[in-house]
Amino acid sequence: MSDIINLLSDHIANQIAAGEVIQRPSSAVKELLENAIDAESTEIQLVIKDAGKELIQVIDNGKGMSPTDARMSFERHATSKIQKIEDLFTIRTMGFRGEALASMAAVAQIELKTRRAEDEVGTQIVIEGTEVLSQTACAAAKGSNIMLKNLFFNVPARRNFLKSNTTELRNIVDEFTRIALAYPLVHFRFFSNGTEQYNLSSGSLKARIVALFGNSYDKKLVPVSEQTDFLNISGFVGKPDAASKTRGTQYLFLNNRFIRSNYLNHALVQAYEGLIPKELFPFYILFLELDPARVDVNVHPTKQEVKFEDDKLMYAYLHASVKHALARNNIAPSLDFSLSSEIQQLPSVQLPQSSKDIDRAASGYLSNSFAQRNQAHFIDKKDGLSRWKVAYEISNSIPEISVSQSEIQKNISSSITQNAALGSNSSKQNILLMQGSMLVSTVKSGLMYIHIRRAQERIWYERLMSQWEDGKTASQRVLFPLSYEVAPQDEALLLSILPDMARVGFDISHFGKNTFVIQGIPQGLLAGEEKNVLDELLEHSKHENNKALELNAHTMLIKMARRLARSNTDYQQAENQQALIDELFACSQPELSPLGKKVFGVIAKEDLDQLLG
Image 1 (tube, rainbow, N blue to C red):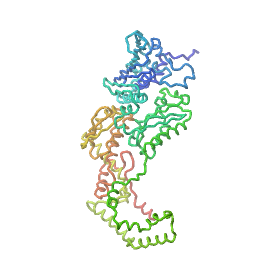
Image 2: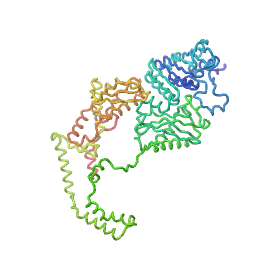
Image 3: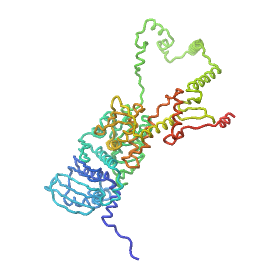
């Protein structure tokens, strides 16, 4: 039998490696930006076309490369970071394994221009599918200029699996934001399809956060700074009002490298316990500085998953640091010993004491107890009992208000009779409001109970669906336009779903730089709920399995219906209760809420009889 095991060709091996390292355009952006950082660049430009599918270009003013290094950089496992195995445990650079450029060269058309400061001319290399087409001398600025064209041009199956431009651009902005936050002293510029998206001047971390996320964060940041022998922690966490319904504003860096850790994230969330609702996520941008020997960053090709030498100690330090920062900045409930404005306006506080008031107070038992020496904590048992006796006699002198059992029953019967009389006619059922959240009504077979909130959601959902299908959703203008800021990576996503938002009654326009203006909202939406609806719709769009540009109408209308459902206080009146029941049973599916939960149930008369024995 012939031998069947063969060595893979370099071309196929590189394409396999590319599947692990370069999964999408944002993966290439991450690797190229990290290379520019490792080259000690102070100015970096990122240029994107067609969400990175057509072009990804990174221009830096770093150290540049010699002709030999430029050629070697595209060889697999070619690196300047590791000379011996011990170097793996002292890594402080972004890249180190020498896989990125070789992987990109296997699945894209690459052109590199680079020059060192001491060289008179630079080097230009053109590569296509791991094949070096040319290497020549050229005029070039100090640093490197690398262009990736037509990503996955030779792997059409991979290209077909890429998401829409909106989704891919959002992923690119994610990577750009992480690098920009980690290196605030570097000047970054970002261009997409010829339009400048960001121009981030070098400065402090706080200035970089405000530049990326908006001016509203300027007063929402709480500094964190803890220095220990084991771990240094610095950065900012958000005040409770900076919490959001999404995880988009949570960044954790280890030795300036962005990492993901559900375990450490739990420590941060627990630090906010009691300060924010459970459904909200705190804002944080924190940097952990740890001895590289105490952490393994070589767990995953993207180097975003790490292993710590002592997880529990990291958890404890992080949790305590954030708690300390919040307490130090008075971000916690505190006792206020100052009088409220209402109390200060009372006549007893405003008007001066008369001589009669002063004499009455001075002759009182309490005043004498504190005025006499050594009497403040002394209790005369006999005198104390006499004082209690006086208080008891005073209380007995107050006329007693007695309510007999028969009168209580009479009041209940009167309430039921009045409730039935408020119905429009005698054919309407008697309806009772139970515990403020349910309606109980009589039916032929027994008692029917209706969950008010779920009934409202079903009614609103079918009303909105009808308007959606007709394309005639009413919108009400707001008196003062509202500003709505989103995270940088969500801007393109919100732009893509604006037509769908208009179809449900929102009038939203793009104001520029992550900011939108709300000029109209759906009729019936309570004031202050518009931002909550938008937050939920954005979060849903991020995880939509279908095409990212097509927001699922069913889910969107469900979220709208839940927000439009009015409070239960509207159903204290019998006429509103009857109207709710009539509208519910006019729906095509009254049994279930839009989320599939039960809206009403019936207790049969036989079951009631059995309960009563």
